[in-house]
Image (tube, rainbow, N blue to C red; front, top):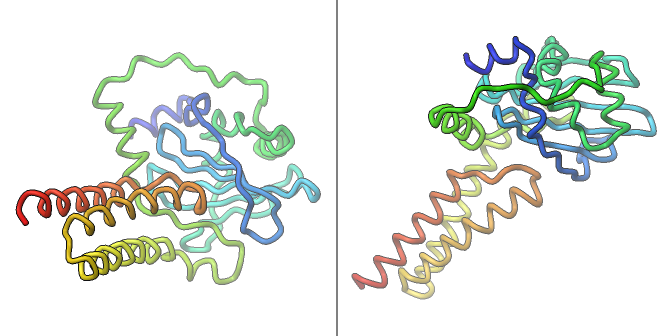
Length: 242
């Protein structure tokens, strides 16, 4: 509720703190993608094809538990707006306008110009806002929304996009299964709780790197805590009690 009220007053998602990263786009028809997670917990991703002046802006709304939406701009014209999960048309432009400050900080100048024009934003408007100091509770609430949000549904421009909405959930379960299998294999091969603990902690670090560099997302804190915590427990048990 607090974030909703702040956006109605024009804060625009605290764009001044948005840090955009670049990666190749896996969506057909787009050259590359820029993505960021705002301090409000929204995940924004912009896929672009500058030759055709085609932009796809994807958002996971933190206020709705990470519900995914996207809008497609051709030039400065809105050509599509949809809810990814249901596949139905939705007023995504209105959601994006509430994140105006974040979108004004897009690192690619040409992409930013197209997005700002399509959304009819004032590119010269300052993202700096006068805000009251955050309380400790507000800081913790923002941290929780940023790192402990549900696994995201990656956007896919294809007829089977809706059927893939649960893909990240199965990928997350597969990560846990692969890690557990590695730990079990280490234990039965070396007959050592210490080795199994090292394997669990190492897998936790590895899966975090995979999510950052291959999946282009923030690492899952829950996975890191699970594998590194399990690894520490196994190591201590094997070192002191066996």
